[in-house]
Length: 242
Image (cartoon, rainbow, N blue to C red; front, side, top):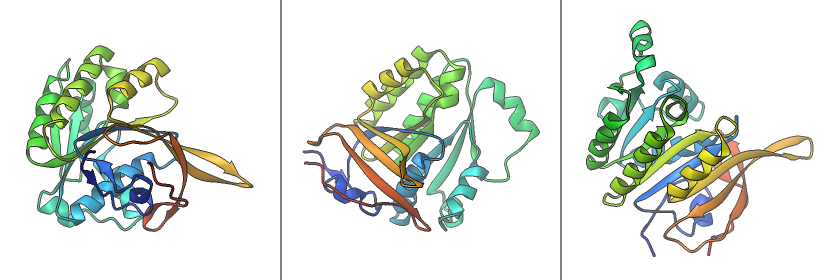
């Protein structure tokens, strides 16, 4: 059995039997408005609170947007950004580099200028992981912009790096944008797959997530409901994976 890392998300660690397996690359998929990105940010915020380090790669969003979204839950990153425990890395494909010069960010971030391939991203990822950082990568724009074989090669490289360094690493991807065949290929490479959505409950909608894959632990596919409070996500009904 793998060593488990506590996420700090209320109810989730009970569901997981103690936490997420160490040295994992987890694919997090979500419908629009399903809080799949909030899920990852909450885990990372809990991590920096405990003295950990994070590299958050932004591609199709901005660091300002991420900070504004996190402020809804009173997750203030100012202190952690100042001391370098939380770093935003803006991975700019060639078509976005000129645009970034026209609209400079007001938030401190590292600019990572990508070329026609993703080699620069691989090198930066390795360096960040060697620093002991947990990482998150929004990958949707890269799938649209680059040859998918290059994207798959990059994810495979990330998985190999993760195998040799402690920590949790996430790939975030919206549902309904990409071909199902590509999503299935990414699922195959990931150590874990969490899928977020919304379902009707009476006259309202509630959040649900399904754990469809999780290596290094014994489990069966489970769908769980979650709620949103001013502190973030919490699992409404926790049933342990066995």
